[in-house]
Amino acid sequence: MKKWFAVIGDPIAHSKSPNMHNTWFNEMNIDAAYIPIHVKSEDLENAVASLKILGASGWNVTIPHKQTIIPYLDELDPLAEKMGAVNTVLHLPDGRLKGYNTDGAGFVHSLEEVIGKDKKNQGVLLIGAGGAARGIAFALKQFGYHNLTITNRTVEKAEEIIYELGEGRALSIKEADQLLDNFGILIQSTSAGLANSEFKLPLSLEKLQEGAIAADIVYNPLMTPFLLEAQMKNAKIVNGLGMFVHQGAIAFNYWLGQYPNTNNMIKRLTAELSS
Image (tube, rainbow, N blue to C red; front, side):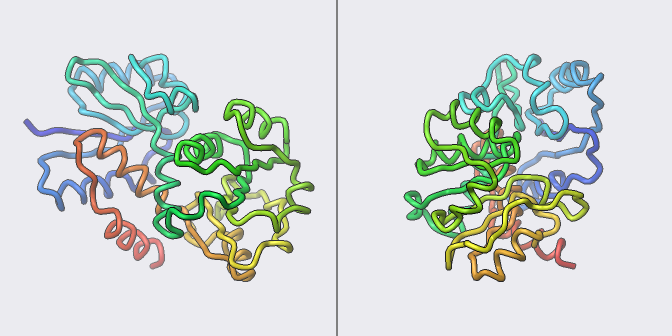
């Protein structure tokens, strides 16, 4: 029987996930389909029940439902439980719904695809302390990056994540600015990377290490203001597209037990976003 999958969110029309997953199904000769479903917050409980009744094999969850979907699931993967957010749901054969979060792992996969796996001892500065930063912080620890510092406008939010991680340190923006040359990897996880963002990155890159790695989680635009400035300082750039593709690939693997071709997808979407 044909399997089907979905992504739910509000809004959802902009999502590139259907295109990505349906391309993978075609490439791998898998008889399946993936559709976007617009779900408003007040309809979330009914939507989850409907997806279950109608036999969806799994689905992705995007803004604003990543936290609020949790009460409607039967089980959480340990990482999703720590993060308090779910972006992937697997409909198990026994009918139960299990939630995962692939965002953080997707970021680490994309980072290591560019820089390799031998930089785990580098000092990492994570800029921002929102939901995305939280997922990345837990994934970095899981993958062996233990020299982590988080900086945020409201330093108390950074301290909360560090406390839950059980390692690392939190700094104010001013402190991080002064100590920037201590870090070999910078990760920009705030909305300052968005093309239409009204926020400006509060951190100066004046003291950026020569040859440091600068990563942004935003993939549209591919080159954010943060990455452009870092590139002028001769940093190695990691844009957010790899994170998007790998988080989808990890979800795909949870659903179907196969890992799709991420390299071709990154090239394909890079061409689309560059045109």
